Length: 162
Length: 288
Image 1: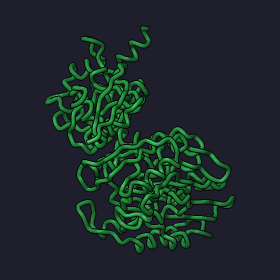
Image 2 (image 1 turned 45 degrees about the vertical axis):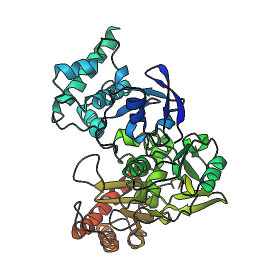
Image 3 (image 1 turned 60 degrees about the horizontal axis):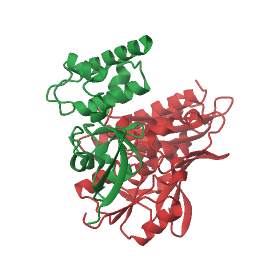
Image 4 (image 1 turned 180 degrees about the vertical axis):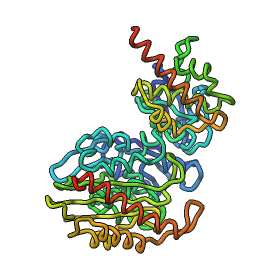
């Protein structure tokens, strides 16, 4: 079977991999690059566990062919923390106990950060609609929404202080 | 998928040549339907022709007579075009009810049209707006009213090797606007049980000079309800005219019974949603 050679930027680093033409970006991240933070919940774009940011817009990596990533910028859950320094979204998920089994968490963190990058002061309604494409079967969402609101407040404070 | 090939042409000509040369190939726009269907084995194309590297298909052009929306323009990008939002708020809203933000960052209206789901959210709004599709193939291009693209659930009038390269929406008339609403049991991330769109033009006296009402998820394809237009044009959209339009919409429906809704519910709701979108479009058009 033919394999496509793809060069792409993942979390700021140039990466190369070989993929089959029908392989999804999610599978390439996990199986070719060993980046298993992005999860497959449904494989059909319903659950958001595989959320990554592609050229600045969040997408389900299970609905992107790996070959499409040629020359693009991909940001994944692995790029959110700076070394051991958690991003405020991650920190607030911990403080608010916004996860239990954790399977949906990478998708929620990537999607929440994508929201706050665009809108530093979202309403609770905006947070809930933005995260409608991420499913969680443990928390009932309320703690997640509170974590995102807290993270937004902290990020605004950091910006004011800076 | 042992023999699948992936192509990413730079020009429409290359794309049509690839589609013509590889019988059983599929164009790829947002991929939010196609990739799911490939994964489930429902479709097994021999080649994928990705349209997203073709610069002209990623643009919204504002022409004198129409907006041209390229086949690779994702739904969320529609919101960034101020003129389109001002003239066709219902179309932009309909396209931005599809799936989640993740999905809408990829999904396109051309793909929504060609997937040929009776419940496609953007299609009733496009039909009401009088939009056309530019169908491109090896032998050239043709312009087709959008309501003639889907022929049955999952089936289109496109010939093998043809694809929709662009959707054209006429510039809004003075005193005109539109609206789309759908009924779903949830608030997001669901498939329409019923969808309804209205495009209304009012003259200075508030008399309706043009009306197009389209409904989705109530028949094998999206329906343009011409009897509803007849009931509304010439009226001031008074209660009697709107009631006639509601009855025409319910009568035109030919829905299925399924887990999302019964035949009777869908028929009744189609009328109710038609009334609501007529009212919203009328307010947006400057009427009371």
